[in-house]
Image (cartoon, rainbow, N blue to C red; front, top):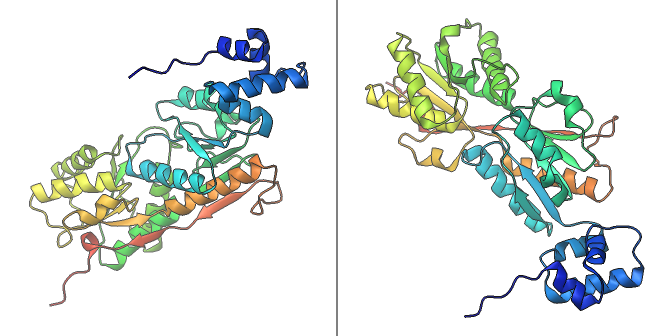
Length: 349
């Protein structure tokens, strides 16, 4: 089978009867090109299927129908599900999504905002991990941008927030209702205080303890730098080896909870009889553990829907109806606690 040759800018120039420079000027939207010449070049681009035919369409329509999505770590269930929902919502609106992970470091996130990636799209849905409000001067962009998350609280962009604090407060309060009095939290970060969702979930945990009149014991705030299963298992091992024995555990995501439950089982500690466990994300895997994992559902489908709605409003030149007095929207998506076996009430005698 003969492989189809890649169409080049020279091919387009020959078909249109113009110079390569003229084709380049049209593709890059150079203003001083005759309308008749521009029309010939765009026709040649479409006829030949030149790789920049999307650009040609952009020049005619004024937009690409391409949405950018940047999240920290696509391997985590939270971000994997969020990405899937964003793509579903975009497809329903006749738009495409291109993806660029951003969670390596602060500079990578800035590169996503200001580099070539941003030139390929009509707008960007951005979930930062390293940038915060102190970076405001470095964040300014001149294209539609919707920020997901709580710690980058800029009032010059539309934002969609999840209930990290409320969700964790409710999870901790539920364990207290079930009789737990020594509740550990796994996933605390030891360094940057304004880093991702960790400080907001920790805040909710502390609020629930205070509301119940329980002491805040720093020994029960167990660090985990990375939020994967091995880190949850390691956190429980360090906790138990240090003589700390909780009767309840809230984990900052489901992966940590999975690792924590495995280590508890390995040590002969039964969930939920000896210790009750609640995670965060309500990932699909949480339903198929043994015991099944109780978890906070952040309602990522609604996060995706609202993010697309706000971004599309901006792309199409509308001010979102959710916008406040400053002209920008801040939408808080409510969470809910999904209870399963890992936090089941004690059996009645």
